[in-house]
Amino acid sequence: MELRLDGVTKRYAQEGQTKGQTKGETEGPTNAAVGDVTLAFPSGKTTALLGPSGSGKSTILRLLIALVAPDAGVVRVDGRPLAPNEVQPFRQRVGYVIQDGGLFPHLTAAENVTLMARHLGWDKARIAARLDELTALTRVPADGLARHPRALSGGQAQRVAIMRALFLDPEVLLMDEPLGALDPLVRAELRDDLRAIFRRLSKTVVVVTHDVAEAEYLADLVVLMRDGKVMQQGAFAELVAAPADPFVSAFLKTRAA
Image 1 (cartoon, rainbow, N blue to C red):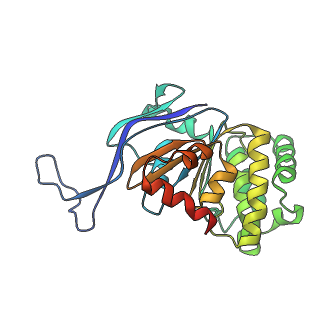
Image 2: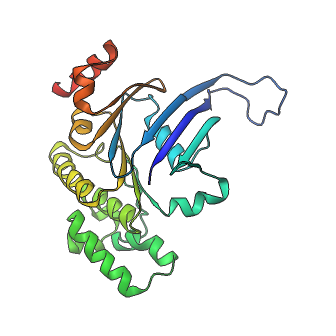
């Protein structure tokens, strides 16, 4: 599956703006979290959305999964605009991982992972087979599946979140700072496993990160953002060899910091 943004802008109200204004009223100030962005996310490739906090990376991820709607421009799936009545079936084709995992605390790890499959009526044998497959792929300890999230380490919880995102065998995997809350040793181990998973499954993957080394290691393509704009995009080596402006050069140098 290929995802694309064509001329997309998303604005958020600044603090103090009056809610519930009607057309014709004076609108309060807004911030453009994403401003007139055109981007393609090629099928089967891993793209890293890289940049400092507030650059619009996470907003793009939310636009791609239709958690927010653009104020201008079009979100396309395989070349077609994503219509409102197609959002729910589309989301079943997309896995989504947030920074803290987002596991439901009252469910065990296994119940979290299988939640959507059970909702969709998968039979027990199919669920068990998929659970075994993903347990091996993500290297989640077998006894960890019976635990509640509070009894899991940070790395284990994030592996469970990845299992949940992959359970329906989605065509696209969207990940928002999946390693950001982990300590360095756990982060390095899971980073290695993620790259192996991406290469094995050959899905369309979009990873949000502010870590330059992480983007270089995980992604086929890098999109460097600043203030809601795309500063440069391409293979990491291309950005290093021919930075578009001083910001690109300075930001990429932080990988050695």
